[in-house]
Image (cartoon, rainbow, N blue to C red):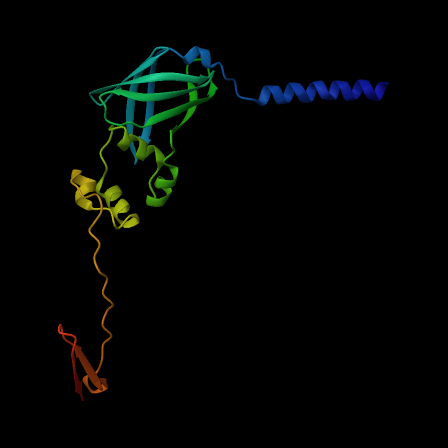
Length: 201
């Protein structure tokens, strides 16, 4: 019986310890209100201010104003969809990971996830997200990385949006091996009329 009591007490202590180690998530506090978000991208700090209601969010960033619809999919997760200006049709999934007295920690991803694209061109997802949402413009470095990763995408289309979006296919010619003139034994010349001429060394 004493062993059972010790196990029971040990169980409650373990349960208490485990429950204390889980992050607090009182997401209800952050469903509406005014918020400030600071991020560091490529060594530079950016500040965004948000006003969020149950159904919409207005973002103020570097003199521009963006409006997005807000759709809560769970107590701590919501989807942002750009309304005005219509810079992008991409939606952002926001998930609150932990909450504090006056702040919260979150993660976000593009719905339809661009993580594979960011890995392919070796650019951080957050940087791509800012470009996709029109907050930042793509740098020459990022455009170069895209061109290297996707060589058949037209640079003209990538920068200016001019069609065609793919480079025209070109026949790839085999590099001619360097030959010493004395190594050539015979040249056969095919003519348009179906005949040929032979030249021997």
